[in-house]
Image (cartoon, rainbow, N blue to C red; front, side):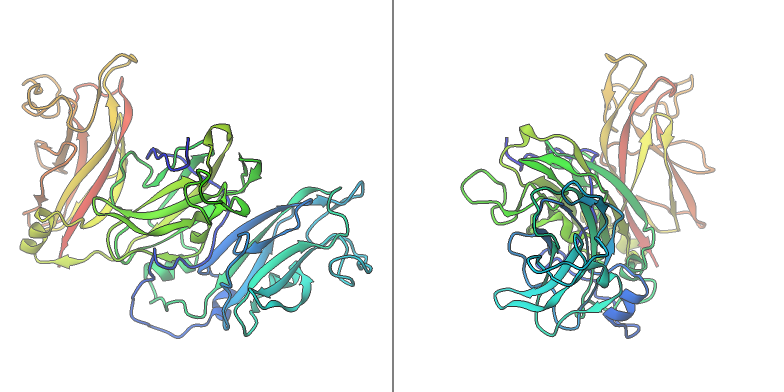
Length: 479
């Protein structure tokens, strides 16, 4: 089985991630509102354009930022980096356990960095192909914000030990990268809120099984395009390695490029890594496949509505175990507003509008929707609901039983005359429900005051149901 098999279900995974995403995701174009610098943003503890957690074992020669077999020179003059080191430990031979600061004793000749602490994590800037830039330093020296060298570089990490073979354990180091050429974020914009590590309009935890298939954001079957132009997002990975290929790896995979012609989905990117690509339904792919860990910093969205699709860069998913987990934080831009007639025209034209989503379980929807006079909305719905307590009871999409089987009059059906077990909408405070189904028509509120929309399952008894519908709301707002 190859790593490009997809199933768009809820699930995902692990470590923080990094490097600005060229060609796939573009930054926001908000007008500059204030001058700022990478150093100031770093000193305030904001989230940068790249943020990735590296995990390297005591027997491993080291790691790098960006994590790759031959990492690119992503650190450019004027950029700033800092690191956050974990409290994890390694063992050196049969000796005690050491954190990234190692032993207090200075390393003698024969160690990678004589004079620095024995058994410590060490770091050094390097230019490809020019070579070393500056001297080795303790990795912990980068816990304060550091302006990078005046030439393009990458950051390489190692272990100050003359014999790695008898080591055990691992360290985790989070690298934060602040780019000098990053767009200025207007106060209150999605990008500005992301940088200050705000919670976002939604925070979705997704689990990616290491044996596949690939998952998606949003985490549903056949996901709609929920990333709106002007939005921002970031992916934070949880510290859980998975057994992939020949070892335990975080989502950055093995720091070895996947070879061509051997069944790897994307040759050239890291073996056994989690990949991501933006996609628009129905037009197709946006940009190239990337390491998912490149999205650990604050990212702008494409200029068209999009979703994120994931894959595992492995030629054989069948021998993998465990999973990765990640939290995708989504920061939505202020919706476009038009006249009432233009809002309806946009909806009917198939324009995506501003897309939000909510879950509907057996007892009802998680939330509703507030419309002002003239606002328009429509819904697209994924998933199935089982009607009844037994496994053999019927499962239904939001279209319910269809127009050939309508709810009878009388009794406690929410809306007689509409399909049984389908999705209904209603205006809070007003009688009766109206039909939505799995792909609704465009619906406009023509009242004089704002109104709350509620979602309802057309079933006379809810308590024996099971399942879930994912309701995606396409909103078209008026001025």
